[in-house]
Length: 87
Image (cartoon, rainbow, N blue to C red; front, side):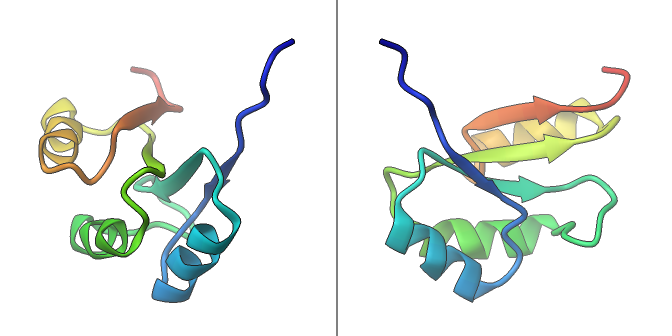
C-alpha cells in the first residue's frame, strides 16, 4: 500500500508555521517564485526556525538562479526543491 504524502505550501507568516506544526504534514512549502505568497530568503529562514525540525521544507521556484537555490539548501532553509520553470 502506498502512503500519500501531504504538503502545505505558501507559508508566509508566523501563524502559518504554528498551524503547520499543529497538523504535522510531511512537507511545508515556501514559494520563492512570483506569487501573492512569495517570500524572501530572510522570511523563509525565520519561518523555518519556527517549524518543527522533522517537517521537511520545500522551496518552490520558477526559473531561479541555481546559486540562490543552493544557498537556501546549504543554510537548511529548504530540504526539497520544486521547479516550475524552464530549468
